[in-house]
Length: 86
Image 1 (cartoon, rainbow, N blue to C red):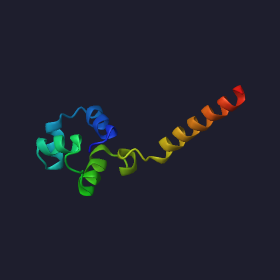
Image 2: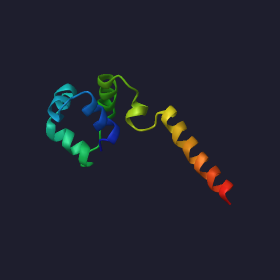
Image 3: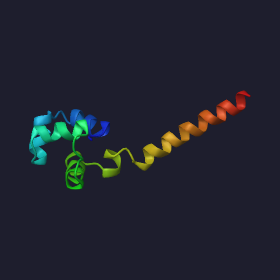
Image 4: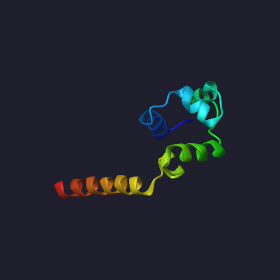
């Protein structure tokens, strides 16, 4: 399945699905299958995407530590605010 981050990067780089397929050496149908979850995105193609978009695989998978820290910080702040309200 293609994660939302990968789709967002494709759009940010003004690439069509055809462009992305050509850059990765796969068919547009393969991109569609990854996107719909019919087939898994191979590690080799995840690495190719990271190189293409000049980012980390963690970022593409939604595991970027700085983003995770912000999410965690937001959750802690919300819980703290709820505790203060009581």
